[in-house]
Each structure stands twice: as structure tokens, then as C-alpha cells.
Length: 194
Image (cartoon, rainbow, N blue to C red; front, side):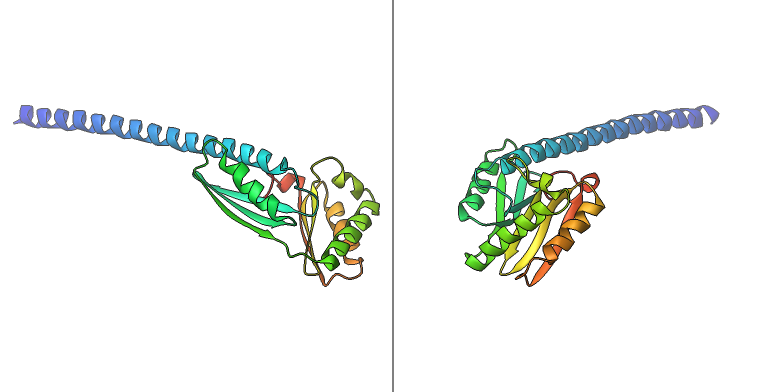
């Protein structure tokens, strides 16, 4: 009787150890798949960001952002030119690993009032403190979006002081109905919009 119980226990242990080894292999495989997915998302994100910031007419009065879900990239934000919206969609669609692009970018309405407000806000911000550095180069880190007289500050600044200075300066520009401060700090930022 003891030999039968001992044999049954040994068989159960062997089966249990085999199941445990199989489960560990499945967990390692799943971890590898999750790691690969994270790597692919990071690689796609880097390439999408590069495509967006190098668009020919992407400038200080536009604001673009994106979200990645597997092979689907959703674009959103606001642009002054309709060509920037279509260029963004076409450019991102060519990124390796992107299977679908959902282009939810809003084209801002044509308005001479908004155009004037954009320029006045830009000039005021460039003259305020050390904010001029955020507008240097081909890809400014601070963006001014004006939609029907409502001003939104978007992008990245290096300090909370600069964020507040930009907001207070934009509020002093005459003609705007409201000012929204959506500026992020560099320490909070992981690239163009999410």
C-alpha cells in the first residue's frame, strides 16, 4: 500500500513540476511579447513625432498631438492650413508598423481677426522676459492656437515661472476672449502630445 501511495505521489509531483515549467515558459513568452510591444510602440512614437515636427508648414500657430494604440495612430490638434492636416496623415501612414491613421486634426477657420490676434500674441510673448528662446529654430516648443478669438498656449517650457509668465503675457493682449494655458514642463513631457 505504501508503494502505491509513493508511486502516486511521485507521479503527481512529476506532473506538477512539468505543469510549473510549462507555466513559467508561458509567462516568459508573455513577458517577451509585452516587452516587444512596448519597444514597437516606442519606436513608432519616435518616428511619428519626427514626421510631425518636420512637416513643411508646421509652425508656431499649429498644435499637433498623437496617440498610439497597437498599429493605429490617432492624430489630433489644430492647424491653420488644411494642407498641414493632410500632410500629417500621409506622412504618418508611411511609418513602418503603422497600419491605420485616424486623422482628427481640426483645421482652424479662416479669420483675419484670429490672424491679427495670433501675431500680436506672438510678438508679446517674444518680448516678455526670456520667452523668446521658445520661438527660436524651425520647431518652436511653444505654440499659440487661436480659434474664434480664444487663445490656447500649448507646448513645452522649462520652468513653472515661464509657464506663468507666458499665460500672464497672453492675457494682456487686447482682443482675446479667453486664454487657456496648456503649457507643460519639460520634466512632464515625453514628446509631442499624447
